[in-house]
Length: 267
Image 1 (cartoon, rainbow, N blue to C red):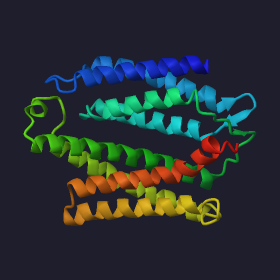
Image 2 (image 1 turned 135 degrees about the horizontal axis):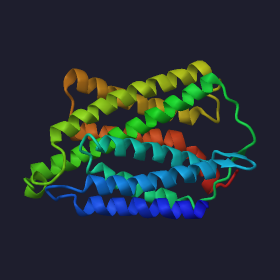
Image 3 (image 1 turned 90 degrees about the vertical axis):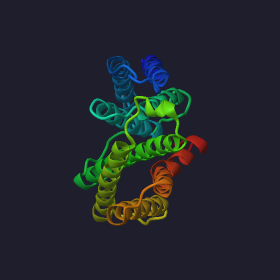
C-alpha cells in the first residue's frame, strides 16, 4: 500500500510539475483546471501515504522522514490553495518537484521511530502546532523571495519573454512576500515563547542546538521584517537574508534528527 501510494503521489507531482513548466513563459500560462486535477490526486495520495506511514499497528511512526512528509504536505496544500486566487506560477513546479523527490526518497531512507503512546499536553501541542505553522509560512515566504529575485533579475535584463509571460507582476510578489514574512515571524515568535513557557530544558544539551539555531533564524527574520516595515528594506540583500534564515531554521528543525536517524541510524 505504501509503495503504491508513493508511486501515485510522485507520478502526479511530476505530471503537475511538467505541465506548469511547459507553460511557464506562455502568455496564458498553465491550465489551472489541469494543474488542480493533477495536484489534487497527488495531494490525496500524499495524505493517504502519511496516514499509513504514521499510524501503524505497533504504534505511531514519528520519524524525521514522516515529519518532513507532513511538513511538505502542508506546504503543498497551502501553495496550491494560494495559487487558486493569486498568481504563483513559479512556486508550483518548485513545490511539486520537491514533493515528488521527497516522497520517492522516503522509500529508500530508513525511518522507523515507533512510539507506543503520545503524551497529549496542551503546552506541547501548542508549541508543536505553532512551530509547524511558522515553519511552513516562512518556507513559503522564502519561495516567494526566490520568485521575486528571479522575476526582478529577468526584468533588469529586459527579457521580453517574461514581460509577455503568465508570471505575476513584481510588485504583487513583493507585497505577498512581506505579508507572509511578517506573519511567519510573528508565528515563530509565539512558537519560541510557547517553548520557553511550557517546555523544560530548552537549553539542555540535547536541545540547545535547536534552540540556538531557531533564535538565530528568528533574529534574522525579525531584523528583515522590521527593517522593511520601518526603513523600506528590499532587494537582493533582503532575499538572501531570508534564504539564509530559512536554511538555519531548517537545520534547527531537522538537522540533528536527520544525522541521528538516517546517518548514524541510532533509532
